[in-house]
Image (cartoon, rainbow, N blue to C red; front, side, top):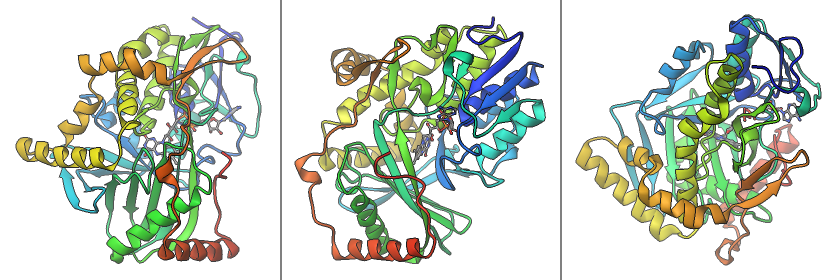
Length: 413
Ligand SMILES: Cc1cc2nc3c(=O)[nH]c(=O)nc-3n(C[C@H](O)[C@H](O)[C@H](O)COP(=O)(O)OP(=O)(O)OC[C@H]3O[C@@H](n4cnc5c(N)ncnc54)[C@H](O)[C@@H]3O)c2cc1C
């Protein structure tokens, strides 16, 4: 097949993150000469020890089985499966969502040996790919563009800390702490992360994290946090007119392939990287495969996002209650979430009537046309003064920072 930048059979990939490395593994294993270029010093450097959830609800297939089927070995990085999660309602009631199936898995992002980024990197190198870090390349020279987010549709940021608390995950509906989105707690092997996601742009956004941490200090006193560092970053959600443009395949967040409702983009990133590689190997057509296998759930998430933008804590409460009721009836909490992502006629109508219109048309310098989810403005209810406890959390963090605690993102990101 070939395409832009086709250099006598050499495949060039821009970006050594999840989607770029997944593509590199498949291509190198098939005997292609693969070169991956990344502007950062290492794979995962964008994240620095962040925990992320690999969802198991947008497809009937278990994602780990899918990875093995593609020849990607999940034993190369640490994966912690979860069957349950504390669902925290906006009025602070806590229920437990549970499934006999593995609902999601937690992986770590970053440059440590056990992270998913490094696990994929090792496999790409073992298969024969060459990775050039701290190196720029023009997209026009590449067959696959996997450079991650470019613009900002939403941000997430959190604090990483030491704790003696056993492994645990919460999913927290609260429009004050996490405007338009959700907050969460993840504890894995003595390391915790409290994170908040902002789907509305805020000034002084650190107060949302401080207030969220103060909430957890009060409601999960056994955490006994010892802060280490703060992490975070942006998400870029777009629907593209074409996923293959001038012979280049746009994968992962470089192609806007993201979950518009909640930002679970890792599965889409890896899957799209695999599809792009298979296109180059002549096994499928990337643009078609994205439209068939990825876009239907992405578009459903656009409709869900449109709905989410219209509601607040009252509806979040209703979602949490309905989730619990549905779980009681089915003795399984996973179908409720899976159904939110299954394309149905109602959400298809919402997508065409409203969802699409919420997105902003953008034409890139090279002529690509896409529709981006804009980072929405703050609302009146987002203006509030931090509690005394949150102010103290902020002071505690400042001390940690003075002692060498790092932050992997800036508010301007
Ligand atoms: C704080 C946070 C929490 C998240 N939590 C979750 C979660 O719980 N579950 C989930 O599924 N998803 C989560 N996501 C989303 C997920 O991280 C992304 O969707 C996923 O990493 C996208 O993969 P990618 O390959 O497109 O990009 P990345 O994995 O980010 O890789 C992009 C790579 O391209 C490199 N790059 C950038 N610009 C250039 C350039 N010009 N030239 C060359 N290389 C370049 C970068 O250095 C990076 O290595 C989260 C995102 C953030 C920010």
